Length: 166
Image (cartoon, rainbow, N blue to C red; front, side, top):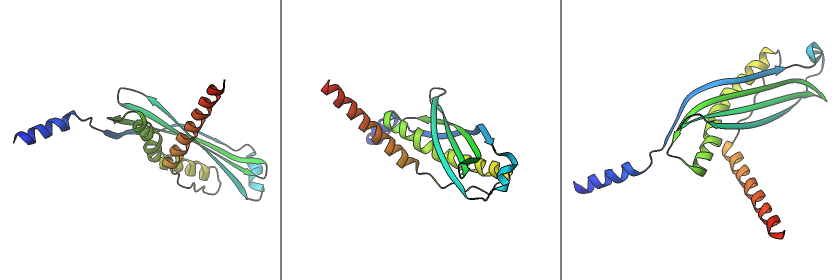
């Protein structure tokens, strides 16, 4: 009996990890067709460029806003057929994580949840603009985060080498 009680006490001292989505919302949306009706006279052989950005902000003690910005530029030859920018955001309750674990949750798990919503908005607005549906491929946010961390570490090592040489 005493062993069970001590085990329970040890478990209550360990930080409890919580991760919960509180709300998902569209924070900003922009759609432009610079060529106007002239774009529909051109042969449709689009060149699609996709840019991705995430921003995080601490809203409250354990509440974080994560905003995923997706910018899609579609060109026909050298002219922009249309441009869509979607900022899909969410509020996430995260506790019990710190440092690298918190950064990974904010930069991988949260954007992974937001991306399908942003992709749906892009598809919806593009078809309402009278363009063919735009099927955006899935994104591996874990790989992007790992690459960003490796790049940051490489830059930090380069800075240390420069300081050592000075």
